[in-house]
Image 1 (cartoon, rainbow, N blue to C red):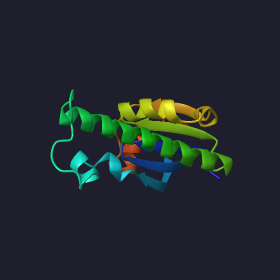
Image 2 (image 1 turned 90 degrees about the horizontal axis):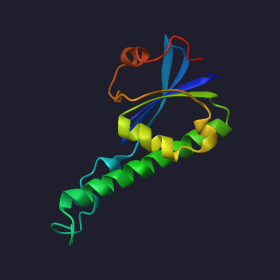
Image 3 (image 1 turned 60 degrees about the horizontal axis):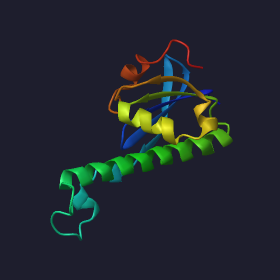
Image 4 (image 1 turned 180 degrees about the horizontal axis):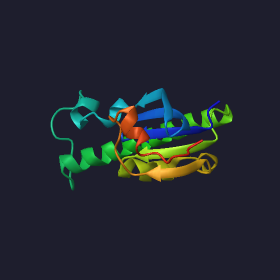
Length: 142
């Protein structure tokens, strides 16, 4: 069992790595929340035209819906991490997330998962190589 997991996430994708040190990380899972990437029209393709209604522009409504999807995804990540903690898959977590997702995860992760967090970094490295992710880790992450 690797003791530390590294979570690299943005508003629609999370990559999960096990770490045996800053030099040895392996990707073990990948979570995708495709709804966060959809435009309003794609999400509700049977609804015609502008659905903004009184008091708000279509873009404001879409932005709120996208934020709601990010919240749902943060909860999904929290549920995943809770199950894996119960399975003793990790003891410590390092979070490397784009700034808005890092804030959302802080709000949505259960307290017992939050207690496992040893380091946080607000960078969007979702498309980064293993080498680039390693460069953002402390020398000792186990």
